[in-house]
Image (cartoon, rainbow, N blue to C red; front, side, top):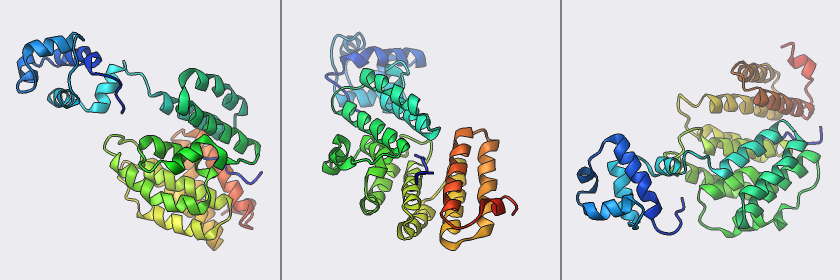
Length: 306
C-alpha cells in the first residue's frame, strides 16, 4: 500500500445542417408537414430547411423538437448517428484503466487523446491522464500549475463539463477547497438530473471526496461528508448508490468508531457487488477495505471470522 485507495450543448454556425435530421424524424414518426410547421414557418421555408439549403433560428429548432416529441439531447444523439460523446468515452476508459491499476492501458490512452481532442479540451484531458498516471505510480502531483486547475478556479459558471472535470481531478484540490465547492456542485448536478437520469452524480461526487478524506485520515471531513452523503435523497432504482452508502458508512464506523461489527457488514455488501458481476468495483472496494483496516488498528483476519 502506498497510501492511496485508487477509486474514482453547443451548436456551431447556423442550423441548416439540422434540417435533414428534423425531416428524417418527421417522416419516421409520420407527422404531417402542416402539423409540424403551422405557426412556425411556411411550407416553402421548411422544405428549404429540410433539404439543408437554408438555416432556421434556435427558437424554431426547439419548436420543431417539441412537436416531434424529442428532447434536445436525443435529437443531437440522432443527428450524430448515435456516436458517443468523446469526453464521456475517454473518461470511461480512463476510469476503468485506473480502477484496475493498468498503467500500460493508461499510457496507451495518450494516442486516443491526441486523435480526439484539440485546444483547451486536449489540455484538460491530458492533465486528467497525467494526474491518474502519477497517482497510480505514487508520484507527487503539482495540480495547481495545471491548465485544468487554473481553468476550474477561474471559471465562475460551471456546466456539466466543469462538474465532470472536477469530479475526475478532485485529488489535486485541498480538502478545504473541495468542501467549499461540494454543495455548489451537488446543486448543479441536481439541475442536470433530468437530462442525465442515470446514476446520482452528486452522490458519487461526495463519495469521491470521502475517499480522499479517508486517505488523508481527516476525521473532520470524513464525518462532515458522511453526514452530507446521508442527506442526499436516493430513488428506489439507485441500487449502486445505496450499496455505496452501506460500504462507506461501514468504512466510517470502522475508522471513527473502531466498530468491529461494521467490517462484516461491509464485506457482505462488497460480496453483493460481486454477485451482480461488478467485478472491477468488487476488487476496488476490497482494496479500499484493506486500506481502511490497515489504518484502523483492526485485524482483517478477525474481520473474516465475524
